[in-house]
Image 1: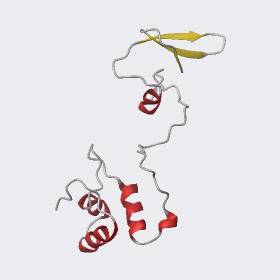
Image 2: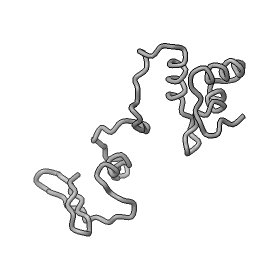
Image 3: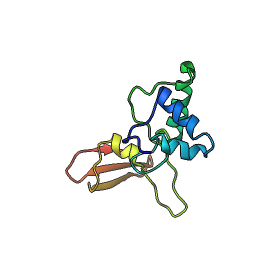
Image 4: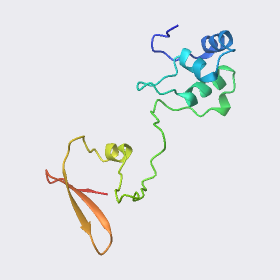
Length: 126
C-alpha cells in the first residue's frame, strides 16, 4: 500500500480516501503518503490536498514551494523557569549559524542586549 514516497493528489487521493473511508483519518492520511521525513503525520497538507481535490481552490492558500515547519518565527522568546533562554532552529538557520559553531556571549548591561560573537570574529547580534 505504498505510494513510493509521493503524496497523492486530485482524483487519486479521492479514490484512495473512498476505499479506506471506514478507517480513521490519520490512518488514511498515512496511506495517502502524508508523512514527513521524520515520520510525523502531515495533517494540514492532507486536509489542504483534500480541499483542492474536491474543487475548492479559493479556500486553500498555495505554498509556492516553500517549506513550512511548525510555528512561524516570531523573533521573540521567553526565559524558561530554569533560567535558560532558548533560540530555536528557525532563528539560528536564518542567522546562518551552523551546528557546532562557537560563540562569545556579550551582554550590554545598560540596554539588556545580548550579542553572539562567533569565535571566528564575525559579529551576529541577537
